[in-house]
Amino acid sequence: MSKIVVVDDSYAELQMIEGYLKSANHTVVSYPNADKLEEKLATEKPDLIILDVVMPGRNGFQACRDLKNDDRFKNIPVVLCTSKGQESDKFWGQQQGANGYVVKPFKAEDLLAAVKRALN
Image (cartoon, rainbow, N blue to C red):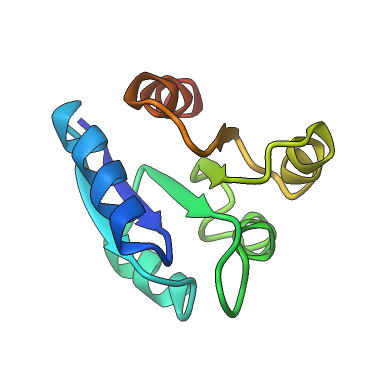
């Protein structure tokens, strides 16, 4: 069982993602934005992070890059979760160090498969 931090500015999306993850027996901690994310992660010590890309303030691409450049968090897999489904967006996500990419709208199995791949 893994501990997963989910960051998404949409409450409805957070609820849905939490539901999918909890049904697969993961522990979930969620935040509405990437503000002070590093401080929160230092406390929570998750096994995986799911980041929405389009958020006010620091977006998911920036947050992912920041985490991957931080020795404390660089080994925690990050799955980007976004409505941006172009190949160029996926490529850009990989360039930021993302370990997985799920395009909204997605099904539970899409998300859980990406989580499983990233954790293995």
